[in-house]
Amino acid sequence: MPADTEGIKRFISALMVAISNCSLYSKDHTSMDELTQNALSILNELLEETDILEIMVVEDDLIVNKMPLRDVGTHGTGLIKRLRRKGISRVDFMREITFQEIKQFISDFSETDRETKAFPHIKTGVIDVRLKGLKMDTDFDMETLSSLASDQTERLKEIYHDMSPFQRLNIAGLEEIVVNFILTFRREASILKLISPVKTYSEYTYTHATNVAVLTMFQAESLGAKDELLHDIGISALLHDVGKLFISKDILDKKGALDDREWEEIRRHTIYGSKYLAMINGLTRIAPIVAFEHHQRYDCLGYPRPILLKEKQHLVSQIVAISDFFDALRSRRPYKRDLEIKEILVLMKKNSGREFNPFLVDNFSRIMMMALK
Picture 1 (cartoon, one colour):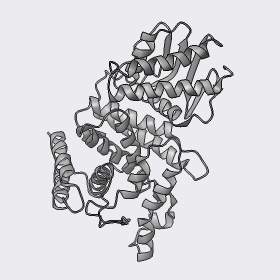
Picture 2 (tube, rainbow, N blue to C red):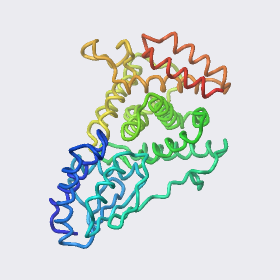
Picture 3 (cartoon, rainbow, N blue to C red):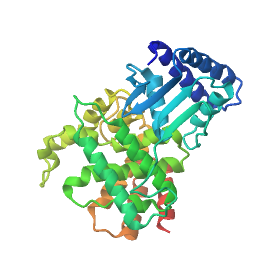
Picture 4 (tube, rainbow, N blue to C red):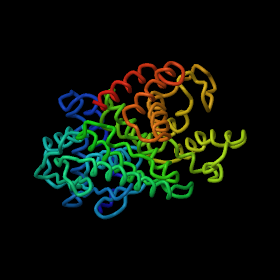
């Protein structure tokens, strides 16, 4: 590894600034040539000491020329997210790289859905994205979709079991779940096929979390969210109830009615979850907000109460609240898809303007009725 660790960090920062600007504008914007040249100049300095600059992502770490890069900062974390969301685990930059090569590379990386081209002096290692052994051009049947959803629930269960204030959250694992669901529901027209039934009471927490994530991403994409924002929303939805991990299982698993003290403790899961998520480096800042607000209600009369009643829920919290309500009611009754869904939509409409954002209720009803056809 080159001795110039600070130079590597400067290159990563310059590269991410260029990618971020390209995301906001385009590669033809007047600032892009200057930003690209800055990144290329720093890279060429590094390549004077080595023939190749190899950047790899291993779990949540950056490995540069076989050595871990510590304290990567915001731009390093951003690069990890970009690579992971492109399904890429490795990028090699080689000597004699040209301005046009790195400029096109920056342009390709500025959009998650855009394929990364091959370059003479830039090589990428692409993870072959497969779902249950099937390539993405394979048609999905009900058994395959059910198996996929079950696998993601099991993956989330593993991540939840490893969570503690003393252990690092497996953000890479959460990203993998989100990517698998996004890829799948873009291929599958009916979102309802990706929502898992609750098989056992003990599995409810994990099944509910994955269902809420699918429903939330589906809503968000219908409203125009894409790329990094859509992934951040998916991860936030997966973690919306994480605070329940810090509540006594005696209370969570109690069969009878909860007393006032126990209900108060249940309500505190929003506080426990937001505090826990706020301490995690590299996690989207939307996650602790959603964990805190998803029971606050549109009219601010839920819990926990905001300091000022004028403080409305974050838009993502409002979307998650709808997904949470829908899946919670759907999971309580015998499976009768058409009637059950229509009943829940009627209840949502009755609570529109009080518990839920009216615009989001109308949008959710629309996409659900389309899915039923």
